[in-house]
Amino acid sequence: MILRLNKYPILIALLVLFISCDKRGQKPFSFVQLCDTQLGMGGYAHDIKTFKQAVIQINELNPDFVVICGDLVEEATDSSYSDFKNIMKGFNIPCHVAPGNHDVGNNANDSKLSYYRKTIGNDYYEFQHKKYSFIVTNTQLWKANVENESEKHNNWFKETLRIQNDKQNPIVVIGHYPLYTDSPKEEEHYFNLPLIKRKEILELFKKNNVVAYLSGHTHKLVVNNYENIQLVSGETTSKNFDNRPLGFRLWQVSSDTIQHHFVSLETSALNKVKP
Image 1: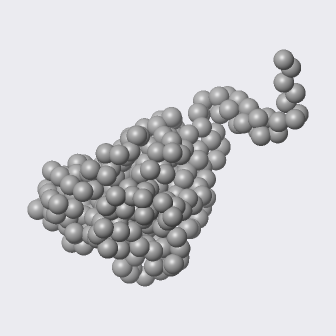
Image 2 (image 1 turned 90 degrees about the horizontal axis):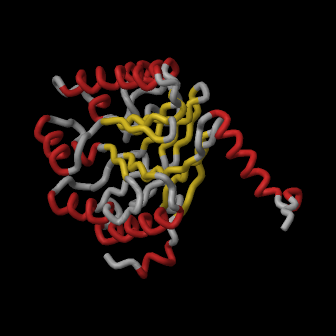
């Protein structure tokens, strides 16, 4: 059988993509950005169902992994965290989570951080995937100064950026708070980081091959581009303030691009999901 490629333009495009990625040593992959599962924000039973539905749809898409950009629950308790972890176990792929203000408090302290670390795990860390570096941060330690903890986190972040940049890997940073919502020079407010810290982080991004910063917190879609660095705060599975559908972002990575698009929850399927 002779396969005539000119009759199959999609096949040709895929072959070109994989050949290009092989030449550069970069294998294509995809991952999901999930924001503010926040069990209890949109109604506890509702948020249980929507998180479960997201797990079902993400498993069907079969990306390489999932990242959750903070606010796992509305109120950090043994019960809510138990529900969150039980649903998260439904993923067929790795799931990496960052803490949000509802997880460790608007003013994080030793007690709240200790509880999160004991119940959920590390609040900041890094992992590698197919020659990309992913750095998960605790933005609460940037939003407000926590004695000993903020300085330790900041030193770790700078050193981790340096090490990953030395590997010449593109870097994706994951957090909860957006750096800014409208302008890099805007004043600090509830949905962004302090101006001085923001400037410092943006400079570090520029110097260390950061290609994207993924966040949540806004409960609405916020997409910015800072000197070719993508800054994306995505839709949630709990409640959106901009009337956008509930859902998540699917990121696709190739040899020379990293791009994303929205996937909405199949609301018609929610009635079939057991709370």
